[in-house]
Image 1 (tube, rainbow, N blue to C red):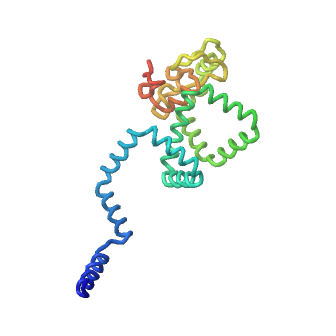
Image 2 (image 1 turned 180 degrees about the vertical axis):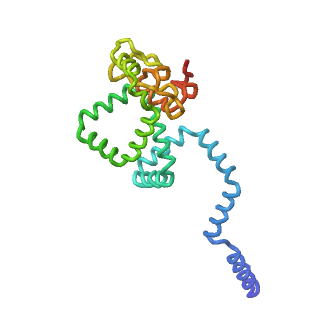
Image 3 (image 1 turned 135 degrees about the vertical axis):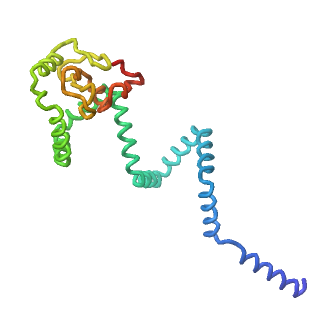
Length: 229
């Protein structure tokens, strides 16, 4: 190879090196490409996940088991970034679990309370202390809605008869109730304009009462079926 040919080859090599992109530039291009077609890439990823769900879950569990520290760090980062979403999801999951597995849930709570009475009492006291303004406002609003009807002797007698009778059943699911298991529910909630009067009161079990919350009867579904009220 002549001297001129060597010089020309060297110049071409220098040009090719000057045109080559750095790793940072290549990464920036890839990011820009992703953001331009984000919906497309997300759809592709979702489709691949659904097509290979069992395999992906198995591999993820295996990786998490072998990389416990990194896995915990990733989970913590995700939770910190989506704190409100995680909190709402946990609350919804716990609420649904309690309704669907109430007997098991109640037995677990009762067992824990018997084994740790001091801890439970301290937690309740701490909650009331931290939320005393909220509880006071809620109680005041409720008492205002009930008014003098709370002293109505007919209502008092009705509630007593429900708790004392042996044939009382939940208004919503027909579950037998007695004594402390009888919850008094407002069919049309006080917060939705309902009144504390005989025609708007019913005996309910704790799961139905908690699940219904402040919904109107036609808005609430009990185990997938509309209420027949």
